[in-house]
Length: 322
Image (tube, rainbow, N blue to C red; front, side):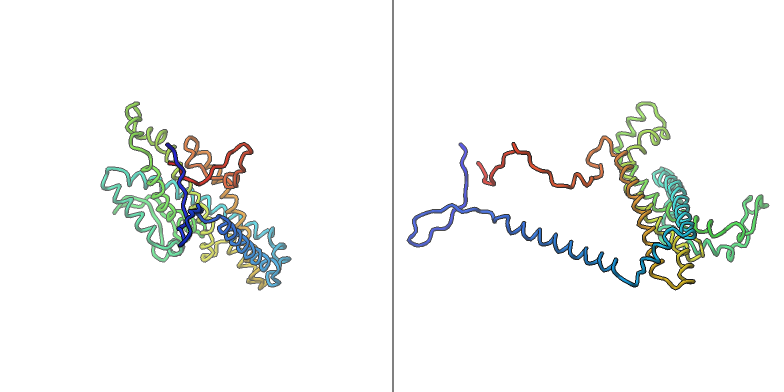
């Protein structure tokens, strides 16, 4: 037997009636507060944008005149080049280090752990300066037999150019971070997948390439996308060694024209454009590797919009039925 339970108002003295009342507060107050918060946030956002756009010190005419300047575009191209080279180097090193960390060999595990400890524990700027000034420590670089003759040798100043120093500083450090990302992705795959591939006669290398890594990409791609964006912005650190990337290029220009703020705005706009492109690319890559696992698929703006109720949908009360 089903009964509907409702809260009742306590009887007052001399009042024998028991008037049913609602046990829940009306949602009107919560709706008003939610809309008030939204309006306040929009007003603050519009205020910030209006202040930024209407400021005379920004000199928007100067900003647009330098947006597509030849030197600035060359700096953008060098920033993209550094990002691609450093991330490719970092991913290759990270994958090798991750496999070494997961290896049963104590030697490989120790070497990988030491690499990650050193390069992840020191600032990127320090590493860039170290590689750039390597000639003061090693005047010549050589490859040969230990404690024997050198097979190949050369001057450090000739070999370690600003581009090489920037690539080593960014790429080797990125390899330490990517190693942990790859290791986490590989460990996220159920061990039964490895056992199943072994039962099918696959070698460990074939299992890693065909079974483990494709499934691990669902976990690897999101943090890797963050690392690519961080690397894009981190290339600005190589301006300290006079590398003609985007930030150093605008620094050279405003040192000559004294238009500091407009040129910094130019650099900021280009960084925002590049990071936006990377965000879009990351979204589609995540969608590709999330096939078959809908809970890992990135949420679109359409999914965040409130869904309208169908006309035939019935509304039920909040009263409990027992």
